[in-house]
Amino acid sequence: ILGVFIGILLLGGLYCTEKAEDKPPTLILTGRSEAKGTEISCVDIDSGAIVNTTPIDCYVFGSTVYEPTTQGYGFVDCDTTFKLVNPESGKLIKSIKLPGVVSQTVIDAKDNMLIGRYTTIAYGDYPDTTGIKSAKTGPPIYTDYVIRVNLSTGAIVSKNKIDVGNGVYATTYYYDENEKHYNLYRSDKYLITINPSTGEIIKERYVGKILVSSVYNPVNNTLISISYPTSDSQRNYLSVINPETGDEISSNLIESGDGYYANIAGYDKENNWYIAVNTKFEVACFDVSTGEIKKRYKLENPLTDIKFWRR
Image 1: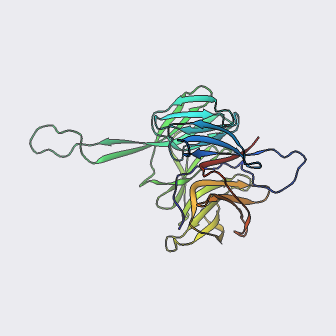
Image 2: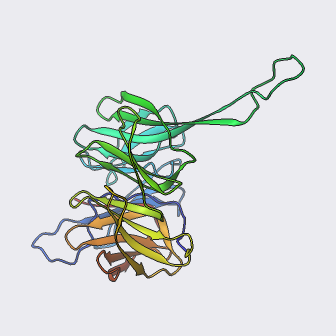
Image 3: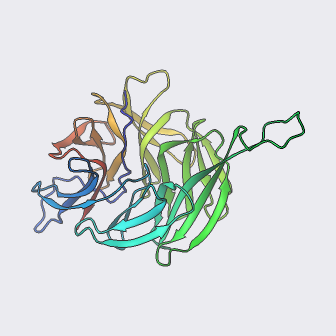
């Protein structure tokens, strides 16, 4: 069964490669450890050496991003503040107060924007037959918003209501930087495209599978995910989806074991590998075309919320 654990999306800059170069850039892993209290750990994968650790209080699941301009590790803390940290030094680059618990965050690198979703809860009044005004203790009323934040100034550029029906899957979301579209996967298994500037749902495509830990490949406009049909939750598949139509391009059965950490995924375009982390803290590099594991290595430190990047 696919493990549903706390994790973090790995953006498309992840490399998991065996190609030799004269001076290969160092592969850095940044994630969350609780060995000595909650902290961000930055690890040199090639040597296994810990580059730096930075204590943090807590964070919101699905809120972390890699910001390419500053090469910062960003997250929303439980005080609804977005913090951007240099993972190698621990230095705070930016701190921005947000209006809510923002998650499913993405970066628009061209416009230097943070984009994400958050929900507010209000309570209506129960019907009162006594003529006395009752307290607002009625059924909860949920309102979803998509927000855009300027990372340079901290200004909230836009905040718009969005209709996501009965909710969305927590680990399938991405941003199409070319089209300026924010994409979520609704609980009824429709991939929905949102204009983050207005909150308008532009397009809906039925996929019909449970998709988790998804990665968008802008090179060929595909969505790569670990998936399983609702009738077969004991097996994990590596599926490639055409996000324009919702059609499945390919689906391969992959090694399941005890599952994979949710929202930890990446794509290496050089080798056409999808990268995930299993519950044994092994990084597994899957050939997207076949589902075969081409490379795996064991993380010495049990980290979650992992990002990979090059320096």
